[in-house]
Length: 176
Length: 268
Image 1 (cartoon, rainbow over the protein chains, first blue to last red):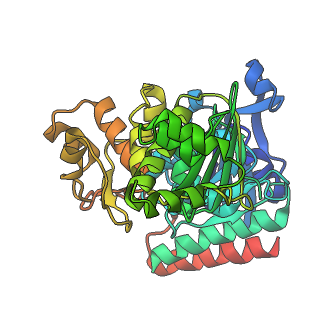
Image 2 (image 1 turned 180 degrees about the vertical axis):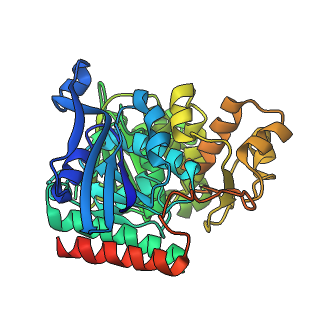
């Protein structure tokens, strides 16, 4: 059995767990815990403290694993461990929460420093009225024009598939 | 779509950076702690600014800059409603009282000061109105934002935030395609700029200039915010792809594997 993995990262509550859930053929193995911090609790009730784990079986010989990183900075020791041997990574950003853009930039720079691995940025919640425009997000996240910034709704399988395919297209391009 | 938020989470400097890079036109409206600010832009350049109840009329600006006496100012105010800023400007130029350059320089200085006041606001809701332009009766300027962004970035003192912005000093810098003209840099900033090259990591630039981590981060942050540089992997830096990425080291097999993954995901 051959296995490969991709990592879904991003700030706290960006939609990483939902993203993996949308395409995983197994129920996502999620290590979620109740949030004790009042500020974070106002955003959501439970969060990922170690990782999420999803699976897509290609055939009898090949399986793709999707790993979601914990969003909070205090668990960043997990990031390097999870990124080891990844094909590429996706940075999820909540388009309606500009307060998380700085952290998203920081996560992106941290992952870029680990390895020259292909990546894309997924702008989650683009269906919401208060979502920031993609071009504004590109500048706010300081993304080079060549970096793919893709509209996404983490609960919508179609957009999640598009993000994954775009990342794999980058991986393929790197092999040529 | 929405370009709105709170200054607590997205600072004025970051907003100016976005407006500058996206070459936006419209008005930034900020509801501060006790007053409201309107800052208008045209193609990413500052056109007009008004904070709170300040009378930003040309007469008030020139009076504040000691270009008009109290009596002249009063006389103009009494005629208010009959004469707008553009007409007044023309009147002053035709009378040989002030040149066009002097009028624009005074307005630029006034608008820049208004923006500097906003740097002290750490809380307040903002929104960018694409359709709202500067008032038609006011004279607009056309001021590049790079210098004011660098100035605002110098005020960032928090170590934690700087580390968030630039997590690794092992990365290098390269100049963006934006022309670097009329940018006012300090001696320390110029020292860093002179070593910017994709071959030099930020750590090396800091060591050469005898700067500590916070000093180099602060300078690089300002240059990044102004859109003058971008972070890149240092040239010649050997970074091994993890051998665990693919179960095979054969390129053709790797391509075939990725194509299978693409096919599978499309079929989901």
